[in-house]
Image 1 (tube, rainbow, N blue to C red):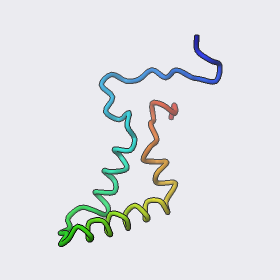
Image 2 (image 1 turned 135 degrees about the vertical axis):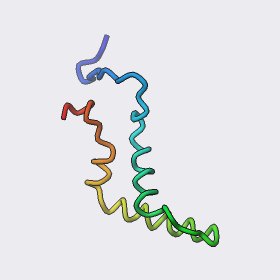
Image 3 (image 1 turned 90 degrees about the vertical axis):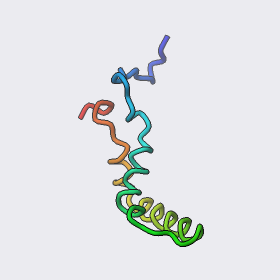
Length: 74
């Protein structure tokens, strides 16, 4: 039995997009982390933290990256 507060969504076959965080990582790599040379481990951490903080300041971007058209009926 399915509770009244749960909606079953049919999932598309072979759904690689079921993990929306993959879009977040792809966006961060494309915008802030690609085409760079890191001299030290600390450089990597600093730039990754900067990228993450930039993304956190854009909640609308996070929502759009995680939006699934098939799940929201858009």
